[in-house]
Length: 354
Image 1 (tube, rainbow, N blue to C red):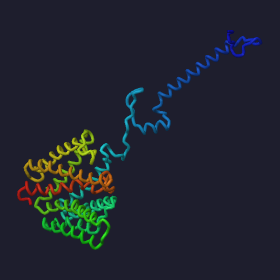
Image 2 (image 1 turned 90 degrees about the vertical axis):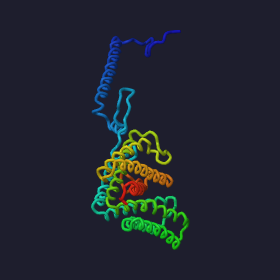
Image 3 (image 1 turned 45 degrees about the vertical axis):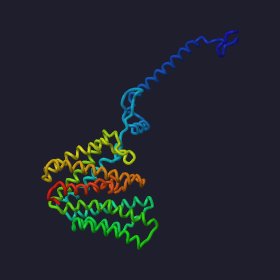
Image 4 (image 1 turned 180 degrees about the vertical axis):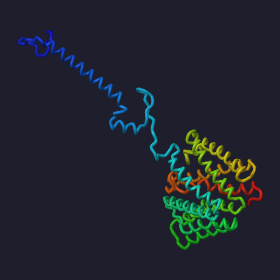
């Protein structure tokens, strides 16, 4: 088989004398261009951090800082301001709102008892309203007028009339619910009555046990200890659970609540309870330790109970009025069961208090 001639070769083709020179120049020019392109690419890579395009900047903002080198470079996400933390809470907002709520409560507790009762009553009214609104998602309509009336009456009855006044107010509140529904019948009356009774007994009735403590001499110190223990329970449980929590307490009810966080709550509350018992209430150390464990257990039970109710109703928070917390009921859930526990322990462990 004949050899193939290069393109343009043939009988009538006469090569130019400087053809080889032109070919060499073309090769040199191509090599120089490739080299310049490589140098420009290397220079661009070296100054990418200073002259990155807009798309690269957006990508860095999206994925965060990088660690490692080469193919093993790994992006670390950066949490944007205002975004919930690992435990699902906007921590700066939660701290600010918590301090803003705690300060007037403590001022009323130590200096203006009747103002403190009014603040607790207001919180209870917001909590009941949020509960009634959440129940409506399941088409359970609570008689709002008698329910709110009982909510406003119960704390003041406990403060002014003691245990007898609280019992009488609770009975009349439930009777008022039944009477209201009898005079104003509605579909699913049984569900409505049970829901109204539950709302009254869950929030204002339980909170009223703290008002019974207000009547005792030095009872406001027990309430202050109760509030500090609830704060310690939430704070230490949040910190330990967020960083070390691995074993969920009740994954079907509250997946983010862990046994490690519960241990942190116990440890922090023991310190706070011991200090409050010795320096605030003037009681033996062991009373503060017992009170701390009991308050943490009851506060955790109240938190889990509200989580179970929210999961049953299909809501994440009871409300949105408190930034970083959710609703008022999301803050009262720990106190509603801790208040009767503090009253019970004070009546049995502290002689002569009640």
